[in-house]
Length: 392
Figure 1 (cartoon, rainbow, N blue to C red):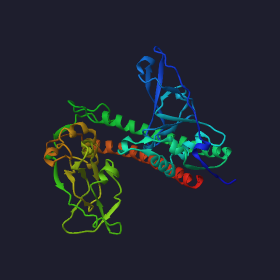
Figure 2 (figure 1 turned 90 degrees about the vertical axis):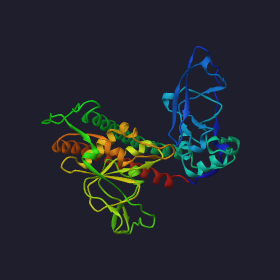
Figure 3 (figure 1 turned 45 degrees about the horizontal axis):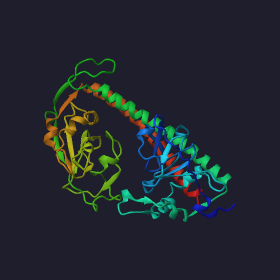
Figure 4 (figure 1 turned 30 degrees about the vertical axis):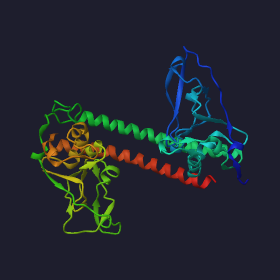
């Protein structure tokens, strides 16, 4: 059957369940996260500690809109765990109606057309302080199938979301495991022996300043016109160290026009950004095992003695020592990390054979993490494609 154009106010069933707050009873309050990340608890309070008393109760399956954050995607459906939680009158609550189901509305609320309607029905000057005019929003249009088709569509997307959540949990667990191993397979401050080691290794690690073991260089700035997908020479520019690469750069994804005045990598180099608007970004280090790659500006190149340090070991050690790196960062608005500081940075390192064993271990783990990341991306692409083709 064809979908029908409706006014939101004609099909939406708004619901308030006013509640009288008792001083000695605990109540669970909720908040609706931005970017359509759902309804979550923000803790419990005694009735006497809730100063504004105009609250109503929620039930599982209610659709909730945060009137102060709706332009940022603060909408969602109440999960079973938050049944009987309470909200103030700064939230709009809707329930299933004869022509519109909340589980279908939850899907539509994520789409660009409805996000635009939320924006058009909000007023104010500051984007962070816009307030939602729900009466105006109710006058706007929505295109709907019958409720049976709404339910089938919602069930379909719920199954995709469950798969995405499963892979996200696995991905997060692997990241947690990696973080734990980094803590235990590198020595803690004040010691030269890590908590966990591979069989056959027992000697204490050595410690030296990085300047004794490496030379330091700077990349050369690349203009937008020089970064050319059709060019032959591989290149790495500053922003990619934050967004594209982790501890090891396995595939260089950009190309640039060559030139004699440009700086090129050799295998085993370690790259670090030298400036950022947040200091934490400067603790990122990435090893590159490919020679001849053009290195852009605002990138520090650490070229370690290959007989002493593997680049992939050094990049992981630097990331592991983030707290110490941040103490060397200077600046207030834009933060900087200078090679003179990194030259004084103390490196703890084992034999080359133990470094290789450690790096192989983390490389295998990274491959599993990347596999889950690729599966997540694929599922999200499938969901996006289905949203475009299944929703009018």
